[in-house]
Amino acid sequence: RPGGEIYAAGLAAVAECEHRDKITFQAHGMGLVAHEMPHLTDKGDHPYPGTHIQKPLEAGMVISIETSVKDPEVGFVKIEDTVAVTDSGWEGYGDWGRGWNEVPA
Image (cartoon, rainbow, N blue to C red; front, side):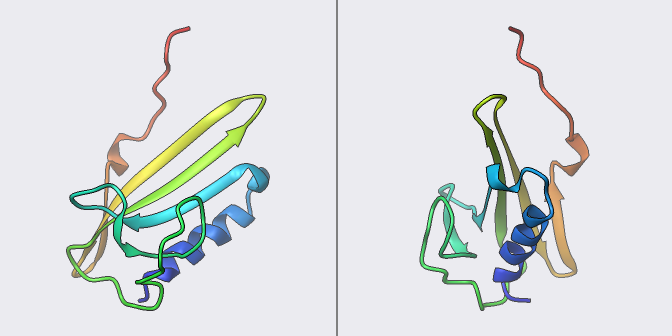
């Protein structure tokens, strides 16, 4: 499947959210630096040339899927999921450790 399908699926999920006007979404590769190929969109907070919008993802690629929610009254939440592309699909690193970390006031 083309890499751009990840970005399209994320945008579709955001469109269904009640607070969609406060949500931004980004998906890109990870490796030696935080934002590298494959670039899955040429839009968003960090627009890059969309080098992998139409190219298939390959086993061994590591993708960062970032969702940010900004509300001037409540604050800012950012979730970054790291996903490895495998021969049989994908593996979400950290999916087992979901939860909230509270910072003392």
